[in-house]
Length: 100
Image (tube, rainbow, N blue to C red; front, side):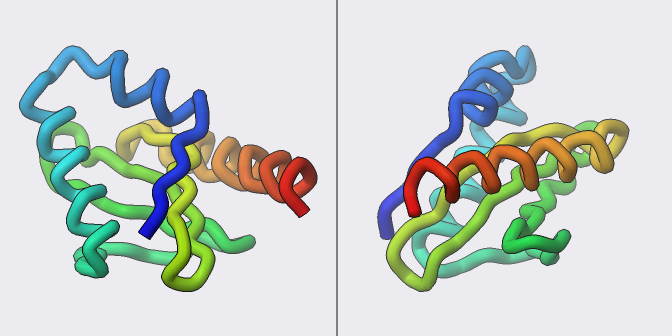
């Protein structure tokens, strides 16, 4: 499975101060890429939320197209959830306009 990371996602994950949290997030993404999604919930418009129960409750927002690739849109935690979902929808819309 191919993985694409948005600049927003890259900026968020590399900016995490907690290296243990970063490692857990990357581990969950690797399991997602292996077809083991774990706790995932759709949040509308083709975006899904990968929940990581560690620290403040990290979230990774992504879009999957079949078994071909996953686009990592953005990340955040429970406190920024609604704002992050809106951002993920916007990033996906922009990506679709550039790649359709």
